[in-house]
Amino acid sequence: MARGRSYDDVVVGQQLYPVVESCRKPEVLWSKLASGNDDWLGVRRNGRFVLGRPRLAVPARPAPDLVDPPGEGGHHRIEYCGPLDDTPRQEWYADPDEARDAFARIITGGPITPLRSSGIWKVPLFVADEKVDDVLVVRRLTDVL
Image 1 (cartoon, rainbow, N blue to C red):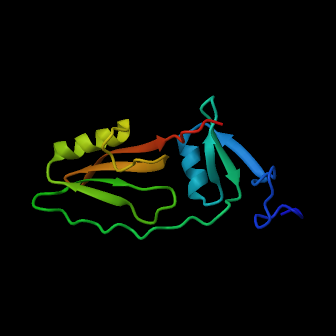
Image 2: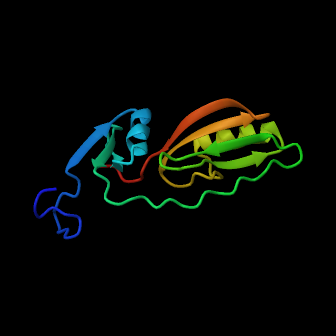
Image 3: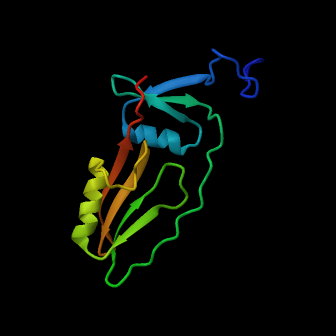
């Protein structure tokens, strides 16, 4: 890094990211974030995702959620995994229709969903332990650049 541009002695007006770039496709956003080299900075008015490189900090990896074993007859689940997650979080359901309804709420951004913040997740739906659908969900940041 150039002299006087370290993250330790940041001053007002200093550009924190030497490389700022953008992409339009959510799949490209996923791959860049999954590489661990980029930070997601926001979304432009034209819908392009803005990224900065290199990352400012190593992301904190929370302890993985304990996987709930299927209950009586519960072989239907939704998994959701962020680009830097080691293991996906799972939600189990006894009824396949209940699992499909919860999956639809996650995709549409319903008020009752485990994905309440902005971010990007891969969300597969399993019915009878078979993957029947897989969607890349992007919740845009609230501030537009």
